[in-house]
Length: 506
Image (cartoon, rainbow, N blue to C red; front, side):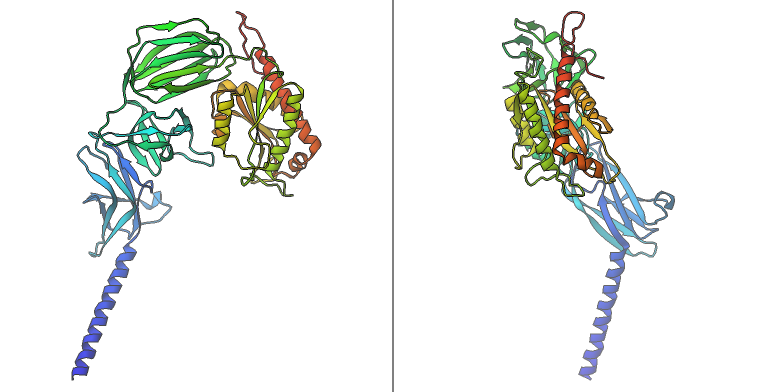
């Protein structure tokens, strides 16, 4: 009897476990996925939207944040798939959430329930305790938004170190920066350092400016009480440098212009927003030769370069950048030709051409070594060449695509890229285009005119044969040298007041 009783009890327990396992299996199938949108750790401020998505049992009631409902999308919006729920919650000033995952609840019509949590965490920021950070390193930068591709997010501009930023959000490894009341940007986590709580949102009145020149440069200096973020644009027609200082309100009562100016003309400003001062620096020459913005203490200093005294190759310092190298091989052709080898061979040919014309040549690499782009940019900023040509080899998923192209980032440096492009076409290569706003590290510096040449497509058999030919490499190097010379000739054109205009060869 005892044995029978134990057997019955064991069967009952097994049945109970089986029913429990079945119920658990049913519940685990009720929710397939539950996530925040985007699926990344986030910081949100009052007024931001927390977006979530659940994929689960159709026809159920799904909630999050203690009862906030999700809506099941109509099949017409989901390519016929049912059971996709989405919800949005507008963050309120009184909400608190400290780096926690979001919990979801699902209830079916027959009273089956399931719960799930997002893999990512959410923090609701308290506007009474501003989150501040400072930029670090020599190459800190701001992005326009959260977009990303192989060149990184589209950059708004570069910043000096120790610039104070007000952070109001986060998505993954990008922080949202409140530049002004109406403007935001995004900064990578790796280029900032968070500050302890208790600081004030960065703001400053502007002092009175000084504008002067020395034997090398023209300068504009604006006293502030904090290192505020800024953005610069080098515009044409007329040639001018526009700098926006975020968090600044004008208390500038005079602008002192001292002796020695050679490149700066009229210097003005306007208060375009209650907390944004816009500086407008008119340039005397149509072709800009670059500028640098940084801080000396809390004084914002803008250094404006002048045209070379003699606009010819002899005596100029030309930087030549051979793309890739070392462990970074770049693209490879069908016959095995490697981009890093081709760019170095062409760069060496270009160096010979330029040195024969009397130029001083600065190579970012002269061997098959790994040199990160950040290190190349820092080298070039230190050495201050008159201009830069970066050499690369293009590639496409289609072997039929071929041709040559040039790239520039800033419109004021477009004439150099156009002059190079026209001469590359003269080699007989078909044209693939002159490309602007190119978001590439070597085109980012504002200190000197720069352009990138994508010589030809190594992925195209016909182009690859040309690229590996020593004779054609020399022909391309001669074309680039001639393109630089044509750019300089354009800079020698005279304007109505005798100023050099730097007309592009278009």
